[in-house]
Length: 194
Image 1 (cartoon, helix red, strand yellow):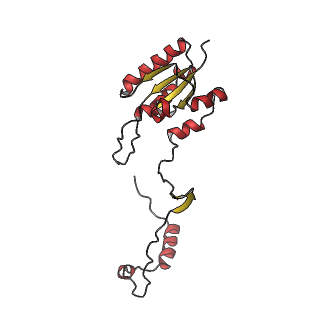
Image 2 (cartoon, rainbow, N blue to C red; image 1 turned 30 degrees about the horizontal axis):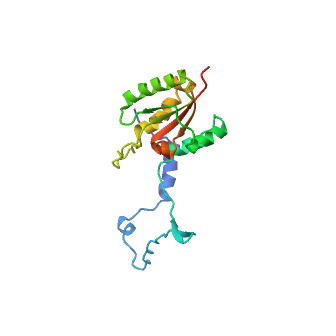
Image 3 (cartoon, rainbow, N blue to C red; image 1 turned 120 degrees about the horizontal axis):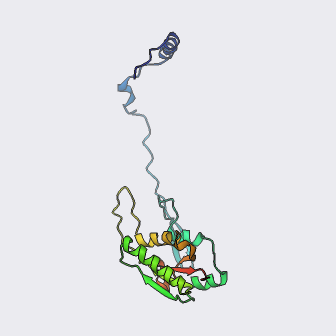
């Protein structure tokens, strides 16, 4: 691409700019001033202590660079599709799952078809509540520039359940009670078989 030559107006403007500028002397730019005050030492921030009962508890906020809500936060904010009374029992672990599948230790390409078969079979048999065990996952993040989530299956299963063909069969997905696996398992509440 050819450079455009400056016309007379551009040259006149450039001359006016250069007449008002001062030449910088590099030696004077980077010499420290002797009379300048020393910088203040960095302040140490201390955690606030709040009293709960008899024990002091530090209230330190956990900081994270990940702006996306955690999986458990996403589940908590999801709207309740099923009966609220039954949902309360479900969250307390009072409802007993009618079937369960353990995907723990499977690869993604084995787990997805197994989950599809299990959910479709459970729905065809008229089951309402099933337990899907994923496991909590291995710690695989080695501190590289791209973060790696723990528990690939744990993050993938809710997505699979919310996509066709399973989305038409699933009414509610929620994290299981501790007695049924806690963060490593999901309750899947299925729609009625019509």
